[in-house]
Structure formats: C-alpha cells, structure tokens
Image 1 (spheres, rainbow, N blue to C red):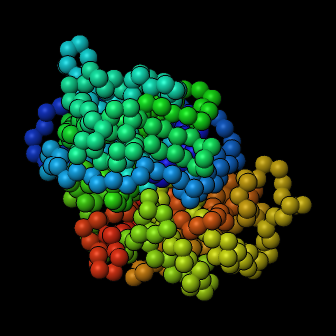
Image 2: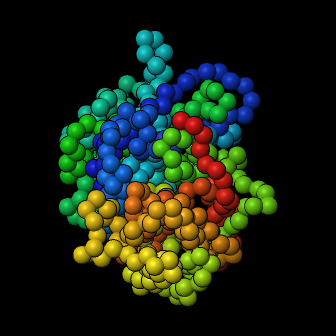
Image 3: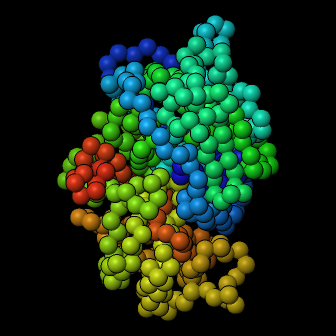
Length: 467
C-alpha cells in the first residue's frame, strides 16, 4: 500500500487533536476527516519553533521516501475478497482529517465497548492513504510493536470484534498469508530491509464523526490488526496507530470507500498551517458546476495508486513539448509532498524555469553560489526584493488542464525561492501541487471499456477555514 517508510519515521514529529463527539442526530449524516497542517500549534506533536528550511527539508525527505516505498513495495498477495454485505448507513461519510508531515491523519473510532464506565469506542489516529487498499490498526498483544503514546487496540474485549479463521471463505487474503491460525496480512514498506507489519484481519465496527454533530458507525469492516512490526526505528512514541486506506483497490483488496458502499470521495488541500479542511466520502463528495473540470482515472505501473493521463506541461503558458515522456504513467497522490517527474521530463521543466527567470536576470544557485540555509531542493534562485512575477505551471491532462498557481509551485522564504519539484523514478503529482483545489475521485464514472476506473473532478477553491 502507498504508505511510505519515512511517513512512519516522521510522524512522531507531528500530529493534532480531534475528539470524537457522540450524539444522536436525525436526518442524513456524513463522515468527515479534519485536515490540520503539520506545523500547526494545534498538533500534539507540534515540532516547536523549527526554521522554514527545516520544514521544507522534512517534506523533501518524505517525498523521496514515498517514491522509494511505492516502487519497491511488497504488499499482501491478492486473494478473492468475499462479497458479503457490509452493514452500512446509506448516508455520507464526512470525516475530519489532520495534516501530519506530508500526510493527512484521521481520528477514527474503532470497536464497541460497554458505555459505563468507559466510552463505546476507542479513538485512534490513522494515516489517510489514497494508495492503500487496506485499513489497519496496531492491536493489543503486539510484539514487537510500534511505540504508541496510547494503549493499543484491545480487540479481544470489543463487543463487535469477530475473528476470521485461516481458510475461512470470508478471509480476504489467501491461505499462505494466514497469521498463526487466523486470516492474515503482511505489509512491507520499501525494500527487503524496510519496515514491515504483519497480523490478522478481523471484522470490526468503525465510527466516524458526522457533519451533523454526531457519529456514523459502519459494522463488519475488514480491519487489519497489526501484531508484529519490525524495522521502524522510531526515536520516541507516536500517536499514529495505523492506516486508513482509500486506494483504488483491486483483486484481493477492498478499500474503505468500497466497504462503505460509497463510490466517491473528495478533499481540498491548503498551504497555511493555520487552516483546517475536510475529506468527504459519499454522495456529498460529488462535484458539479461550471468551474468543475474532469479527467479519467486510470490504472498504472503501481496497482496501489490512482493515475491520470499527463500529456504535457507548460511554464507560464508555454508548452514544453513533453508528449510521450510519461509512458510509465502519472500518479496523483496525497502521500507525496512534492511532485516528482521522470528525469527527462524534469530536465525540460527545469530548463524552462531557468529560462523564465533568466529574462529577469535571475540565475539559479549552483554548488558554489548556494548559500547556507537554503533548502535541499534542486532548483533554487535568489529572490530580489519585491519580486512577485512568478509563473504558473500547467499539467495538461486528458480532456482538461490543471493550472497550478505559483503558491503551489514555489516555496519563497526570505531571500530565496525554490521550486517544489523532484526528479524521480516515476511521475507523481504530489500534495503541494494539489493545494487550493478541490478534488473528487468518482469511481462510478469513467469508460471501463477504455481502461478507465473512474473520473477525477477538480475545481479551484480557497481551501480551509481558520484552525
């Protein structure tokens, strides 16, 4: 699944608080995950007064690790998921998300417990991953464990817990993935020496905050129960207990939206550390209106990710002629901070940006002229006082263009400006280049005969509200 090794090595730095409020409400309800910026003071893992350069460098390292993970990943082997009905309410999920490092985190209620003396559920922070087909949480009895700052999920005493024996026809993974005598899973991040989590797959109840003030519970979800985790090397305890999977799924997988019988989800990302946003799952995530554009969602070289057909790139409305450069496909992912381009395409984009700034007599730093304190991004320029003439960058997608404003292309701090792009082994549009847009992944749309798995709809939007 698309959850990178450094994601877990960074999350001990950052998190934020969201309390589940339980109330009885009437009428349609939805699940909402609140997005909170990684460097917000509202995060319980707020890293303190670190410099802007340190913040950028964290995102650079996270992007590099994300790419290493995605294209050297061993995930659970594919099996035949049982088509049994999941007990769900037909209303939408509108769950609050929190932004941690380069990643978004949701607080989800898991399990069912006696209301007295404790709560009916236990809340856990899970990484929202649009490239993960499975949702899992670390469970009681794990050894070795991720170092959590709260107790592990006590699945054995949950009233809604149901085990799945090895070989049971409802087990979503093949028999060779059994864990002890139960239906099991195994997820590795990165290469053969990277972090790995193993455990059982159980049936459980997941509860999400409702945008109507209460909560919405979904029963009999397939939930990974992490029992053994190796090679994470966390320096200290983290509030992150697992993964919330919203990936495209496929044979042997059923992501959250599919288990909840909802074929659409949307999010709106932001750049300020003083704003919140939300993720919606269900009918309320569908977008309509004159500003809404669409491009097909496709399968690509990694089965874990959503792909779009990137045909060319423009700098300040000047096309670079990159047709045919993206034969490996172009993924779109919330888990990578910055966009990565294959080397030949990156070189052309880099050259186009250098030419653009040359008309203002601004030359990029080289190894000899680069001052101390400039981020580790490849392409950085000195920024003259008062300079504001930054270009847009346009991703020419099949059918429509995604125009990225300068705030989604450049990081301007102090006396320098850096381009938030990386050269990589594959092309991927990262979260920084998705800011100030609302995106909707509609898995009911698309021409399946042409290999389309859905449609990506997007429109400019001033994302977020005051934190």
